[in-house]
Image (tube, rainbow, N blue to C red):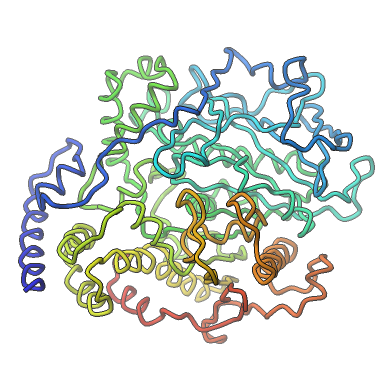
Amino acid sequence: MESWHCLLLLCTLSLVLASGEETKNDDDIDLVSFLRRIYPGLLVRDEPLVINRHVEINSPKEPGRPEVHSITEQTKDKPVSQDTNRAPGPLVLTKDGQIKGITVDKAHIFYGIPYADPPVGAYRWKPPRPVSPWSGVYNASFPRPACMQACSGPSTEECPRLVSEDCLYLNIFVPLDVNFSSPLRSPLPVMVWIHGGDFIAGSASKPLYDGRFISNFTRTVLVSMEYRLGAFGFLVSGKDLHTSAAGNYGILDQQEALLWVQRNIAVFGGDPSKVTIFGESAGAQSVSLHLMIQSSKPLFKQAVLQSLPFSIPLKTRHDALKLGKNFAKQTNCSVSDIVCLLSLTPQAVLTAQMKTSSKIVNPFRFLEVFETWGPYIDGDLIKEQAVAAFQKGHWQKEKPVLLGTTSEEGVIFVYGVFNKPVSAVECTVYITAIFKQHALRILHKYLPLYRDADRRDMLAQIVTDYVFLCPSRRSARAGTAVGSKLWMYVFDHTASDHRVWSGLTFCYQHACHGAELPFLFDSAAVANFTLMPSEKLLSNRMLCYWGAFAHTGDPSSRVQQTTFCREQRLPVWPRYSDTSGWLVMNLTVRSHAQVGTRNHMCDFWDQLGIY
């Protein structure tokens, strides 16, 4: 009986979608109202985000950079952590001025180095400007505020305590054996981390991304950067660059940080000709865009893409402008009045951003709900969707790429949105809203595999296959066809006991979205537990692979200069190609190369042709 109900509902929804396609106008669509018109009983998240009341907004002085950029009585004694047994910090001379860092047990650290002037006041929605030189010694002993963001729900404890519009800083981690008083005979490879967070949250200084261990273990110089988020980084209010916000500022910030690395990393012991950029989720999206952007080409040598949501579409210019129009409505400014928009307080911008995030601008591209703010196709910097660019070969194909996913990417998204069971009827509605005319074939493929009344596991697997795994596989195969060097992995570790990491940010029992990060950064302690010996072995092996890739462009290279890696009989990670049988590295406690476990499902998605 339920199957007939589903079919009837599916037909009804298809008619609603079809009629909406003909009558839609330029007004923004309220996602919640749209879905409830279709089916009143839907379980949807319809409450706007609530600002974490513990976050402090740091309003910078204007004009110019705030006093925190030089050693003053206010800042010179500010600690970076509870570690008080630090050795005297290293001193370096960059092209912008002197910088003094700190030395801790695993690395030399330089926190909060400005790579651009503050994007505040009249420069709020402008491309980043090169950093102004300073006199004296810059105090790099503590992190600076994160970029403007708000937090809600179970992950609020992971929010940065301080946020500010003045946030264009980066952190540098250098192995302990680097002597800054004498140049290295052989400069070290550089790894530049771009954090994730849906382009609305996250920070380079998040404890999870503590780079001291990965730097020391892999003998690389690790750089992590902040970049503008949400409306501050991606608002589009018009086409004229001089009289409106033109968007993609967060990506331009990343470019500016990479340019700063090229100009300055040598004095930190790094080799500017050996830069690997790597990121997870929105960070991986950023990396994929830099592989497509011609002006980013000279700024790095190779790339790592971790959990890239290939199938979440970037907005078109038309849809980005509609989002900007709705944002302006929330501020009582005209979308064309840039003076009014610039006069808004940071808090007012953030509030309008959150209110706008409860809507989507195009219900016929339903996946936008997972990424309201972010980069858009402007026709200049970004010319097309990443998944299309990789399949057509419109990217820097000569650069080695390491890419992969976790085995259960979709769990965090589905269970984060639906905190109650989802029936087959509700599941049908969502699948139809996303896949439209393809919905029947997808339901026919997946429904027989899941018998539970609660269909969230089924939705999670569809998200894993369609958004992450299968388009990554297809893009990798397209790359190998034109001679690119690619390596694929799946992080498939499942805990032996029932442990779920705090805040639902990471699923530990399931290898879901982001679950590999504490293994890569050796930062499991931030999740309030200690890795078991076998898990620590997995963490070390992942670092061996990532480190070897940074040094040589091949994760299986034996050139990696870590004693542990030389002593281990690491499983060979073959290049992804048809001659190797399309083998991927299964990163689990017993890591091994294998044929992809869901190839039959990815064949199905490839044949649908809807990435």
